[in-house]
Image (cartoon, rainbow over all chains, first blue to last red):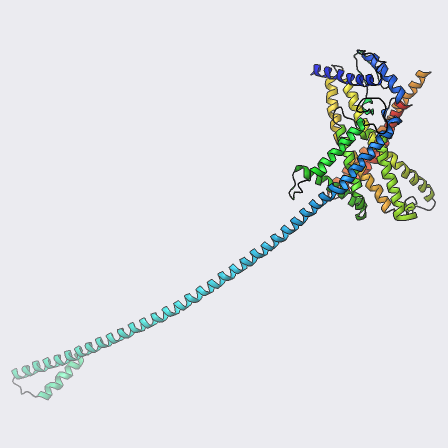
Length: 214
Length: 249
Length: 77
């Protein structure tokens, strides 16, 4: 690192040396040592600008002329080309952003509308389904009622018939029992040697049976 | 006087970098001679045109990097002008943008090694400041007539104080171009001279590391100063312009 | 006699640099007060950066003047 720096320092010296050589070509001999160059520089500066180059009046005109030229050129380019273009770009972008935002708003509105339509369709479908279900239910109820009524009627008819047959069986059973009792009584009476009075026997049997057959 | 000699061979030429030299040999500097000042001012102009014109060539809605930089500069200066001077100041926005860009790029390019810094020259900054001063003064009288003199008559102060304040205000008004120009030139000159002094210390092997570190630090500070000075020059121009447009005291 | 003049130049240049201390205090004062205000009311800080830079520039200009006086004494007298 040190060697690098030591190399750079003479470069600085050489640069100023070159300047001085240009200015005082005859005065400063080539290969002069640093002290010699420095005194030559003092002499040169003392002659032209008293040390501070900024105060060298002889260069003012040059700088001012070139400065005004450069400023005029920059101003011309900026005001004619660059600034309107950048302003245009920025306002274009602003316009694009506003347009995009409005389009987004529109799409949002559309999405909202679609959602509302979907909701409405859903509600309609649900109502329709409910209606159909109710109708079906009613129909099924009616059928069921009819089937139940039919079944009830059949059951009633069957039970009536059974009742009738039971009654018949019961009646025949009573008659048979009476007949058997009469026969038995008649034969008993005959065996005991009594005269058979049909009416008397009938009455007696009926009397006895009334208690037994109830 | 500017040169001090030590036995180790340290050579101090802190002011030599500000010398205006003809570009193509010779010693005479006529007003038309292309000099190193011309070269670096021209380079600044080319950089500005490259950034603000060729950088925005695409006119892209989604900007690339260079176009973003151009738009940031545009937006910053425009907002500054609008915030300080109001809507009617926007008419002078191109000139203020010219000043800002020129000073910023001339300052920044001067930080390159072996370069020349036009903004360290009193002649250059004095012209910049005088253009603003004369322009603003003329503009104030054209826009407001004699009302412009109200700038110096502090009507809110006690009546006895007003003449005294008027003298002070008048002096401070005429010191404006001086401080405006010296501030820029002085800052740039001081920074560059300090760097050159530290560079000369690098000739001694013992001091070299310290001086290298110091140069790095000063250079970093200079990068900041370069931007801030361009900003300050521009913002003061805006303030003076506001005084011309609304001389309300 | 010439040496005496040079002595005066160098002494004057050195004395002129004392003026930079004032500028340093001024700039520090501006920045410090800005920071104090900005910490109390951070929402108002961004709108006052322009004022900060203007104040700093004014304070700093006077330091630059003293630097200029020093340079003039060194090189231009």
